[in-house]
Image (cartoon, rainbow, N blue to C red):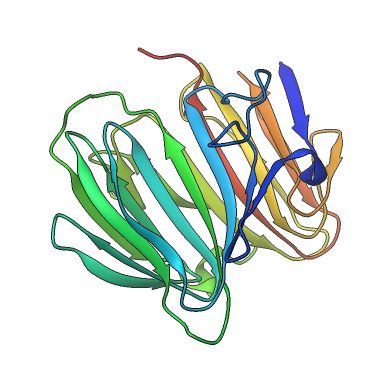
Length: 238
């Protein structure tokens, strides 16, 4: 079992005034050869966008793109004809496949929107682009890990073209949970959204991340009230 720890203050930072983006992995102007990806988890961006601002129309292809709002409301539109506003509790996925153009902006003219944008390499290239979203109420994730992203064909969460599972939990202080991999050759990356958490023997704080390659069961304990996102991904391309 190999473990890599990414402290919150070690992430790359792009501050454009209207956008503040922390990059766990190399992205845009931030490049660190030792932090290109974790398995097939390619991008993990922690974004804050000023009121009324956003990303104009831009293209993507052959990537599974997951957006998870943490605060505020994010407005999405794309070349497939989808227009949506997602808020905390929602999870959105876009399979870029053969190519899609989309835009994202802060839906509010008064408050920031904060969200995670996550990219996962797909297991199939040039698929037909698709969009999906689902809501996970706060009480549904209370003191348990709930699957919010799963491979195509699963009934849990939004689906992506990859053998990857994301889980979200809101844990009261003292809550202890074990996580077991769905596939033995996968790895697990955990991001502490809020609070302090002990994963196996490692204590992690707000916005710290830890990647565990080919783990056995992983033990999780909330040192105080906490929110945690787990991302189980294959470690190598098929």
